[in-house]
Image 1 (cartoon, one colour):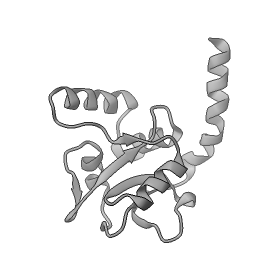
Image 2 (cartoon, rainbow, N blue to C red; image 1 turned 90 degrees about the vertical axis):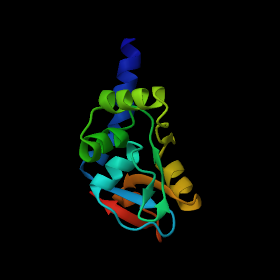
Image 3 (cartoon, one colour; image 1 turned 120 degrees about the vertical axis):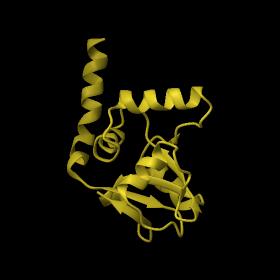
Length: 136
């Protein structure tokens, strides 16, 4: 168990540098720029569109440094609160949480090729030509 904890701590070290970098929300094609409150509603399933466009958010796995930063900076929630929210919402038949993708490259690839997709990446990882709809 001790080795596992040490491994997890070491694995998280590369992500620590991401804590100071802005998060950029990128979206496929013509989704319009938006604000934090709209992203909060999108990532909690309260809305399924941005402007007149259907939007499909993607997220990172539990424990990923970018997900932790997103939850703190954008959602103002802990992992437990966010996960609990989605457990209840799914139980009462109100939808499912955003699709989970393993890393930044997967999020960028998905968003750039999937109509309506929305994801977040470190500002330095925004690909050329990407549609940035929010940055914080």
